[in-house]
Structures are given as structure tokens and as C-alpha cells.
Image (cartoon, rainbow, N blue to C red):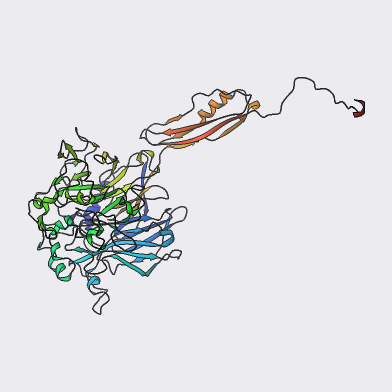
Length: 623
């Protein structure tokens, strides 16, 4: 199946896919304790959702180029009727192109800055600002570029609006400085902030999906792109642009959010040209990294350290494999098009295509399979070996998911859950990899903390990856959260800082849903108790009754209620306190804890058994 049949080709496949989804959703079940509920509907080709730092503002963007905000009123999100931002005139909304990604500045609540990655309408690219520009004309199915732009919102305005005069193009400020698009798919991508404050952008190879495109593919717009200066002649190598550090295509780029320049700690940074593709490149060898995420609180907070955090990239495959990459350091090479998933792609591997920018050395010479999990200590040399994905799953046929491993120095790809595999869990298949979200906190259940969710746009399942430290294979287990056909075209997921739940968008029907969790709850929660010693018969009995009074309920399996008291014996005669930690757990591994203190006070009025002497008065001069 070719790419445009799978990647957001909404108009052609909407009716058939939605029909199948509606039938299948009747049987889609989440695990006990998890609930999917609709948050909003009515969006036009919804693409994603993000939140401000405390979750009181929720932003949703549409493929056509609109951004909407909803404000939390204490009970629900209330959608502003007018768009916060509208760049639909500039956006090229065709096939899987359009307004791909939107993110907020880490200091958005004070500076109002927002960033967006989108494909540009060729009419706007070539003619805007000239007398020949026609805002009602859309030039699609021709060469164009992808662009990264920043705007400032008018923080405090009601309704919330954009100051369009603040428009700043960080990438693609001219015809020749954008990410070249030479076909009708594979543009990427995602824009997110790294944990060190740098800006990350994922871009596609922008090559043909219907042939082994090594350049000059007849179905592509390569000649028009060269004629217009959109692409250099040296980049006319089709999918192999992903293997060129001198091309913006097929990369994860790392930029300065103020200028769009590359970061000096990038692996191939050129101080004399900080806007060159090599200066901006962080990782390479990707086909269509439509969705990318980053693990919170990973890496460094200093851009000079060259450690922006652990990046998860879902790369959409061609005819056989989808895959999920984890890039934890600079310069790693995902291998496309020499490899699809974990294995060699013979069509490209044996093509003999050479790199015009590096002495016409065959691309195949520069990216062999690895012999172990150890990356080169030199970031600039890491591109010369295939950094295999952490899991790859097959298109069609039976379920098949594989992970990277080695037999000595020979790379292997055992199936998940089989003997000799480092990864336990389920087998699955799909057609369009979508990166998801790393779960923080315990709002989704303590058993989900630190897990990674990922999905597939066509099959619409959501899987759970249990992660390792990355010394060997990154994933130790894969399990199912939501079954096949759970969603209606899931293309983005995000954890809401307000409630800790997972929000996801269904592109087919324009809805926004959330997955919430009803885990263990206190029926009679632990509370501090203070008793007077002379008002009770037996302090020890009272203490044990207090322990036994605490109760809880669970939705998953059986209740387990424990405390850390070892059987304290309490007697009156002095004030005494005992602080106890109560733990309420279920059979699914979720638990909550709460501390409470039991106190006995012996401070009542004293009593005397003897008769006190009578009062006596004595004159001072008589003694």
C-alpha cells in the first residue's frame, strides 16, 4: 500500500475508514479503570492538542491553518468561538500536507510566543507580496517548501488574538531556504521544545512514495524545484536526501528559537554558516517522521551541553515496516532509505546512488549495520552506522513486531515476546506509526508512571512501552492500552498538566477525547486522630480499631490495603504518637498512599486520693 493511502489522505478514505471504525469501536475496550470520554467535537480535520504550563489553556490546531483556544472554567474547557490564529491563506492543505504542528514557548504564559511547522501553498510562496498574487488561488501538486514560523499572541486579550505583525520565519524565509517538497507526501513533521530550551523540528524526505526514488523520478516535481531554486541540483537524489547532512530533508533539526540558527553543540555545526542544513541537523535518516515527542526532565537544561533530552520519533515506513526510534544523543542515523525498520531495503541499498556533496561516495558505504549497542564517542561519526529503531511493526498479514538485538556482533531482530528476545509482550501490526507521550505523575495510575504510549494512525490501537535506560535495547516490554480501531484516526496525543490524563485527537471526525483513570480510592481515608487517655478504656484497642477503620475501593481486581505499623502497644501515662503509612493497591499494580497520625494524650485534670490539709494563716512576726 502506498503512502498516500495511509497518511492523512482524509478526503479519499474518510467514508470507508470511518464506517469500519464505527463498527469496530463497539467492541473496543480499555482496561478496567480507564475511561475514554469526548472533550470537544466539531473541528475541521483536527491535527493536535497542546496545553499551557498549568493546563488552564488548551490549544487545538486544524490542518487548514487554524488554531483555537479553550479556557478551563473549573469544570470544563470552554472553546473560544473565533480562531486565535489563522494562516490558512499561507498553508498548502493538500494530501497529507497542511498545518502539521504547533507548540507553545516554555515561557508562553509571560511572552505569548507560539511556533508552527507547515507546508506552504506554492501560490503564496512564489507570488505573495507581488501584483500577481491571488489569495483565492491554491497551487497544489507542484514544488514548494515546508516552513517554521513564530508569532506572538496578545496575552491577556479577550478573546485571545494574535499580533500578526510579530510574524518571524525561522526556517524557510525564502524560496531557497525551506525544506524542499518534491512530491505530495513525506513532509513530516513536529515542532517541540527540547528540555534545554532549543527547538526541535522533524522533516520528511519529500521523495516519491510510488517508486524507488533516487532522483529525477517522473512523478515528482524535482525539475521545477531545481528551476525555482527550491532545491539544489545536488539534492536530486530522491529519498537519499535523508542521508545528506547538507539537506534539510529526513532529519530532526535543532534550532535556536530566537533566530532559527543551528545550535553550536549540534554534531555538524558550521560556525561560518549557522543556518546551513548541517548546522541545524541533530539526527538523520528518516522517511516521514510525522510525530515526535520528548521525555520530560531528560537531558540537560544547558544548550551548550548538546543534550536536549530523549527524543522519540515515529517514522512512517513504505511497504513493509513502521518503526519507533529513540534518539538520546547527537548525530544518530535512522538509516532510511538504506533500511526500512530493522532490515535492509534492497531497492535503495542496491541502487548504487552516490552523494554529490561528498565526492560521489556511494551512500551504502557510509551506513553499515551496527555490531553492538555502543554509539561512537564522536557525535560527527555516528551517522556512519545504522541506529536501528527500538521496535518495528509489519504492514498487513499477521501481527509481527520486532526489536533490535545481537548474536555476538551480528545484528538480529527477534520478535517481541519470543524466546531470546530482550522484549516481552504482544505482537501487533499497523500502517502508520504515530509517536505518542511519555507519562509523568500517577494520574494514569502508578503502574503507568514512566511508560511511553505510541499508536498507529490506520490501526488505531494504543500500546504501552516499558522503557529501559537505553544501554541495550530501549524497550523491555510492550503491552496494549487500547485495542485495534479504538480511535478514529489518532494523529496526536498529549498529557494534560491540569489533570494528568491523556488527550488525543481523531482526525476523521474532528473530535478531541481523553483517557482518564479511576484507580484506587479511599472509601474511609486515613485521618489524624487524637484521644484523651482518661476517656478511653484500652488505648491499644482504640489504636487497632483506628487501623481497621481505613477502607478503600478499586476497579481493577481485588483490594489490597496495608499499613506499616508493626503492632504498637500503647498505654496511658504519657502522651504518645504513632504515624502510619497506609497503602491501597489493586491487582493491576496501581496504588495510592496516605499518612495519618494516631495520638494518645494524658493531659486530663489530676485527681488525689488523700484529703488535702486545711488552709493555715501564720503571722510573720510570730515565727
